[in-house]
Length: 344
Image (cartoon, rainbow, N blue to C red; front, side, top):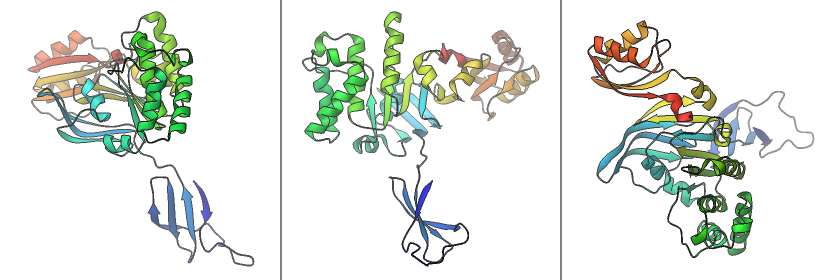
C-alpha cells in the first residue's frame, strides 16, 4: 500500500521516527479504500490507500424457487478471481445474482453488497441473455438510456454510450433499429448497455449461446476485448477452454445442482479428465472408503449421510467400476457428472 504521514507531519528540524511505526489499530475505513491507521508513535498516523479485497461473488445457504419449485437449495460459494466462470448452474442463479429474482433463503453478495445495492450504487451491472428489447430503439439509444438510468448526466451518458458501442464494434449498427438486428448485434447491445453504466463489475450471461460456429469465435473475441479492465462473472452451461472466454478467465466455479463440484483455475479443472461429481444414496461412508481403496481419490469431505454428493478423481476406475463398487457397498449412484465436461 502507498502511505503518507498524517497530521502532524514531520516539520523542519522535527525528529523523524528511527524505525517504521508499528500499526496499533485502524481508525477508520471507507469503501474507497482510504484508511487512517494509528501507530505506536505518539502523534503519528498513516493514511493508507489500499485495495479492499472483496470476493466478486458470494452465496451462503442460498435457496431459489422458480414457479413454486426448488431450483437451488443450500448453495454456498465464494469466488477469488477477477474473471470468474460460473458453469453449470441453473439460470435462476444468474437472475438472483443480478437482482432479477428474489431468493427464498440465504444470502447473495456481489462485491460485498446485496445485488440490488450493488446495482443501485453503480458498482455492478448485468447483461442477461436475450432480454426483451424495445425494437423501435437503436443500440445507441438503448445504451444511452442505460447510462442515464445509472445516474449520469445527459452529455456524459451520450459519451459513455458511444464508448461502449465502440468497444463492441457496433458503430455501423448504432443507429439502426433493433427490430432488424441479428442475434450478435442484439446481444452486443445488451453488453454495451451494461458497460455504459460505468460499473466496474459486470455479470454476464453467456452471449455465445446457440450462435453458429462461424460467428461464435469472432464474437467471443469482441466480447472479451470489450470487457477488459472490469471484474467479470460469466455465467454459462459450459465454456471451451481454448475459446477466448476460457482463456480470459482466471477462475472457474463448476456447479452441480446446489453444490460446488469444483473450483480453481480453468486449465487445472479441464485437465482433471477423471474428476467426477456424484450423488450417492445408501451406505455412502462405505462407498467412499471402498472407492478410495480401489484407486480413486476423494476431492472433498464425506458427511456420511444417507444421501450425499461426492467429488472424486476416478484415477484408474471407469464409470462402470464406480457403479459396481457402489452396488457391493449397498449404495446407489444417482448422478454422475464428469467435471471436465464444463469445458467441452
